Length: 105
Image 1 (cartoon, rainbow, N blue to C red):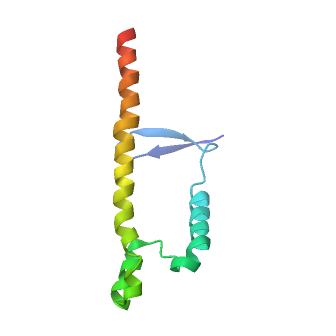
Image 2 (cartoon, rainbow, N blue to C red):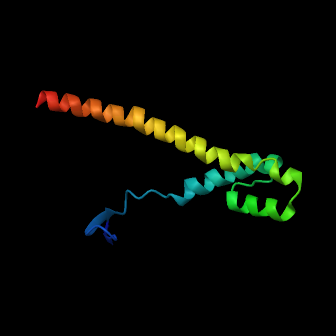
């Protein structure tokens, strides 16, 4: 396939293969579509925290604030899980692999 020149902000000229490009918008759009289908009956599809927060502030009724907790708790729980996974699984595996590499050298 053809090659395209790519110049990034911090890297030099790189060649990018056009034939191996992933069409990212397609799976992202499909995922958003599926979330909309699943959550329209439940929340009216409030998948954008800023937009849901703004609507809750303007509407200012109790029902509008009932589901706001997920937008605040969810990212913190996800970040804690990701930090644990990185620290105790990914880094542990890398240290173990590096240790076995050093002992064999």
